Length: 213
Image (cartoon, rainbow, N blue to C red; front, side, top):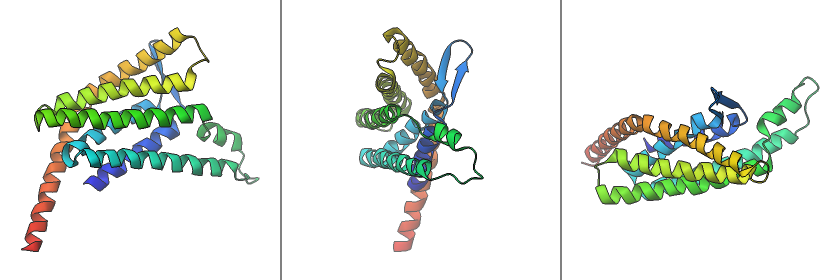
């Protein structure tokens, strides 16, 4: 089950990076990158991994995600630089969609590394305190704090100096409200994934014991 969770986590990360260039609006309230719709689900997955498999496994998952993102960026850069065939008339569009600015890329990697590791740390601390109880509390507390850090770091690095401070604060606030509400909505998903994962691990352990005996 861990293999599937890791695959889902990394897959969502890469997909979020690909669609990040698209902006969408919620009425007149906020303009958000499409990546947030995908990226917000990476935190519950890490929380499930830490809940079932422990802090060290969660940390390795985050590390694997960072390495994969760096590799993806390298290969995307290489494909952009490849000479376009005469029949391919969309080189500029290809570069626009996949070739994000260096500053935004740095902001994305920095915010990811700090916030995801913070999520693992806070979740594990609360788990040590409460045991298997209050999963909803450590899931939401760790995710909400980490999302705030993620949003603040990303917007600060990506846009500081390009717009007034008041606008930056508004961007952080509106994006965080969306992520805050999404974290609450995703809580039942965390309970479901933890339940399914524990049952699968129990089944695997039982089969392993039977095989040994």
